[in-house]
Image 1 (cartoon, rainbow, N blue to C red):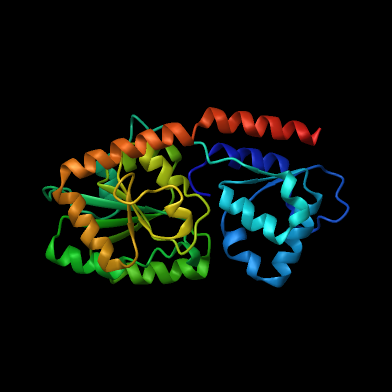
Image 2 (cartoon, rainbow, N blue to C red):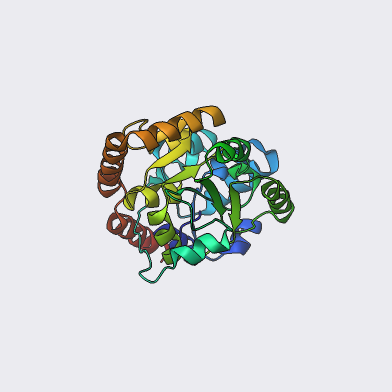
Length: 293
């Protein structure tokens, strides 16, 4: 989960790595949090399914971000249904006041003398499930026609082999840039200066980057997958695309219709305030942690 939301800290404090690797007979009480890949993808692997079931059986509690995720888990492990709680990710954004936008552009090799820059930001750990290369070709084609269009991919090298593939592809893709991960405060400040935040994942649990962009008044264009569609209502709180060509069409409509953009941003901000309260999330995890005592 990229973005450093509250449950990440709680998860690290209540779940020890040794429990996940060898959970049988652990004397350390722990809880678990379903991230997305585990339920959406790992569950299909027999060995991972077995380990997850064992860990879930010994956990004092489990947290799913959505009711759908809970139901998917409960369908696989019915005996654990009563210990699975639903808690959406809570969002709190803290953009840096000292962030240097021009240095950011220089680090990405983006010319700073181009008028009306449109920077699209894709935030993800570099691994195949996030599919950061999905839009690279259409962005390069678009950039050739309109040099003010740029895609910046930013995030940690989670999968070293795949990261090498990404670097090689980006080298040959004008208008597409790759940056290493940065502090959360600077990342939030960078979001605020971008035209839109992009998500092209094959699978998601609940993207913190999407929710953070919504909170920062930045429009989101996301791949139309269940995890994204659970938090984005198309043309209401964001835009959902099903293929790269549709992404470009929707992006251009957003650029050419400032009224639509303003309404999407407003409704997205209201949605985050109503459904992704950081204070509510904190209280939930505080209460759950008490179950470990």
